Image (cartoon, rainbow, N blue to C red; front, side, top):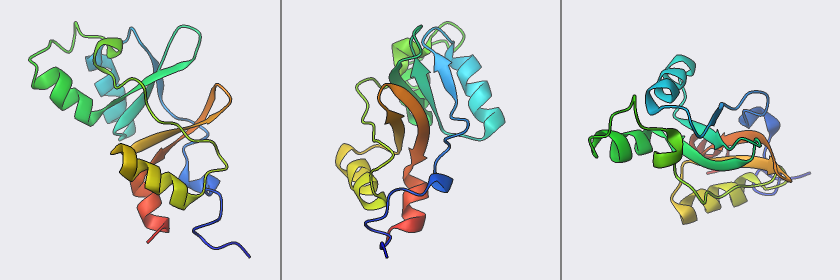
Length: 131
């Protein structure tokens, strides 16, 4: 029997069926409205070919938009997203994923299969499962 530390990330912890993926060209205001309506704190940013190119979080909105006095109606996600993000595959264990969030100081990890996004894991999801 697998322990929680060695078991793959349970699929019920991931938003596999419906992670919010938005285009680079979407404005910050439009993204924020969608984030608010779904009660989520991060969206995945995709290029025209549906390839993951970044993530936009509440932290980005505060530090890169509000604090920088940028107009949310004129600023697009591609200009303020976090690029070069860490991703994981579905076979990562919960412990490995939590360790990566601590090492990279990130709160969200996109789950990918090849180049396709299959989910988004939140650090909060992992804290529930891993002591």
